[in-house]
Amino acid sequence: MKRLVIVMLSTFALWTVAAPTMAENRNSDRPSTPNTEDQENFGSQSTPTEEDIEPVTLVQLAYQGYFADQGIPSHAALKTAIATGDVDAETLVRSAINKGRLSSDTLNDDGYLNIVRTQLENLNDR
Image (tube, rainbow, N blue to C red; front, side):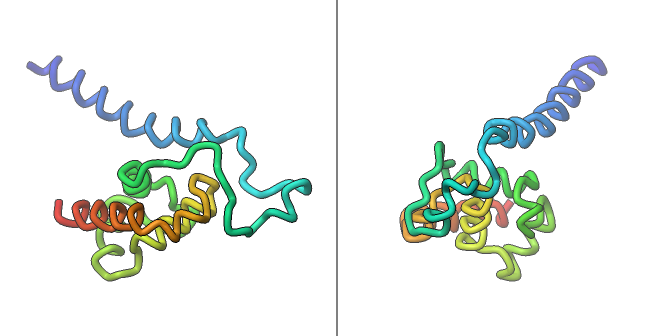
């Protein structure tokens, strides 16, 4: 029984460390700021990314601390920020846009924003 508990805890610990690391590594070859060739397109309405993330994944990454450098807290502090209105769907989407994980057009996608809102509410209900 002890061995099973140890194996389960070890697996969980590795998973919680590996998920944010893998998310960052997937985009490590993407520059965080535009290079000189992209300067004229920077800040335009359509700034496509190589791979937009799903709304559910966006909230999971926020909970795990992926957007801490954007001022989005993680874990219990994220739940508090959601409850107080400091973090909402638009704030989270803007953070993902700033990190190059979403297109700037996502802010105009009501369907995407509604799913993020629902996920944030569900996170706060847990």
